[in-house]
Image (tube, rainbow, N blue to C red; front, side, top):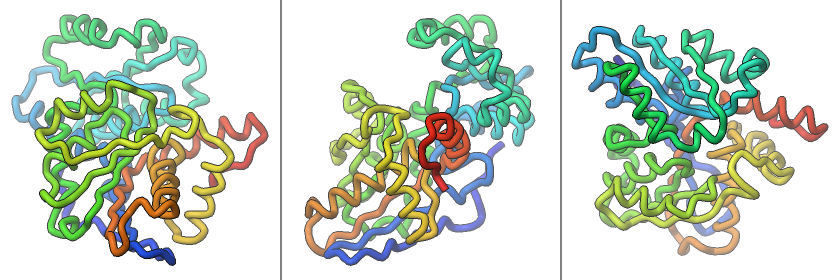
Length: 301
């Protein structure tokens, strides 16, 4: 079972010489292995499942080679003493998983890995039906952990400390975190989702998970999901050097880069208070650096 942490998650001001105030909520501190929003997206999924005391508990989920979600589910399974199975996109990884820090970590947590072709992976609904039939007692969590239980969990990211902000910002992959913030934030708050994927159906998917229409999506893909350009690296390294806060390059790094661009373009009215959620995922830096090193490019420090 996952527990509500006893220590309050800190909100840190980012000192910028602008006419707005910028803050970041360090959800990456929530747990050493189940990082950021992943902890809350898994919280009710896993706890509700285990409360029903299945005879042969098993958690199945989906993800790519460097998935924060795969890493988090494997750690949550290990912590809860529940078997886990990860369905991994890319059958070519079956012979190379030992060279992949995320998949190696998942295996060390006891997760079994099943590698499927990208074509199979695209049809996850069919794959889910097959797996549920094969493992009728299993909890099957979708890619990224996004479902109604996840939305309820994300509510925990909001508290009295987050009420006094005009804008709430989060990176968006599958949309569960944005949906939870949208559903449970204050009526006067505007929620901005920074899309790191190119998915035209994302807004409608989020709308199915929240009753509110207080959110706005903006593109922060910077060339596509998982793509890291030189400016992303420069920004992340500069941000850490100035503010002593590490960012990963797929989600929070791109969000913060886009937030700074919007501030420079005077998107936010003077005097606005902006809160960004650091959704963790720092485990992905090692894998990103392996790829950057092969390309003889600057690394993320």
